[in-house]
Length: 103
Image: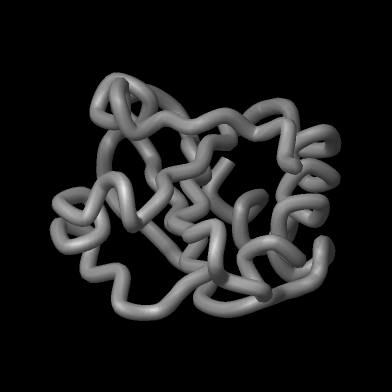
């Protein structure tokens, strides 16, 4: 289980300031479960960004708003605006690189 917490309830506050990385996932999704430790690893290394998760089954309105059609879908926000995303399972280096270019 990931150490990155669910941010659905305070989503807009979470993404509103600075760089926020949000993993849109579902518990039944194998690649999503495989991404969880990778997300934890990157979160531990990239302390300048905030990391959170949104379960698409519990928050379909957020998934729809940000056009999440495939999961895992890691969205990168800067000051409330979606600036980048990584779709599908990726390694730590790819995810870290995607996040760091927005810091």
